[in-house]
Image (cartoon, rainbow, N blue to C red):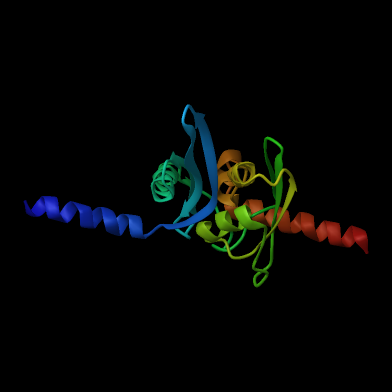
Length: 188
C-alpha cells in the first residue's frame, strides 16, 4: 500500500523537470446531421531546458484534454540536441518540412533568442540562450516546428564528428583553428 502512494509522487517529480509551451490551438468543425460538432487540436512543445526537447499534437472535444494529449505525445517524442557551452548551436544549419523552411545560426553570448513564435517556443524549452533563426516559406506552426526539429536533428557536436572519423576532439578542433588562421591570412 505504501508503494502505491509513492509511485504517483515519483512520476510527478519526473514530470516536473519538463517545461511545456503551448504553440497553437486550432478549432476544427465536423458537420453532422444536427449542425456542427466542434473539436480542438493543440500543438505543444516540451523540454527539460538542458538539451532535450519534443513536440506533440493532440485532438479532443475540449481544450484542456487536447493540451494534455499533446503534452503526453511530446514527452514520448523527446530528442537530445547537442549544444555548444549549453547555450547555442555548434554550427549553422537549415531545416525543412513541407513548405516550411528554417535557417538556424549559432550566435555569440548575450545575443538572446532571435526567432519567431513557434521556433522561439522550441528554443526556450530546449534551453538554448543564443540563436538567430529565420523562417522562410510557410508560416504554418505545425510545419515550422517540424522544420525546426529537422534542422536541430542535423546538428552535430565535435565529439560525434570526431568519433565518426576516428579522431580525437582536440585534433579536430586544432585543424579547424589552423584552417581559420589560413583564411584570415589569405584575406589580408
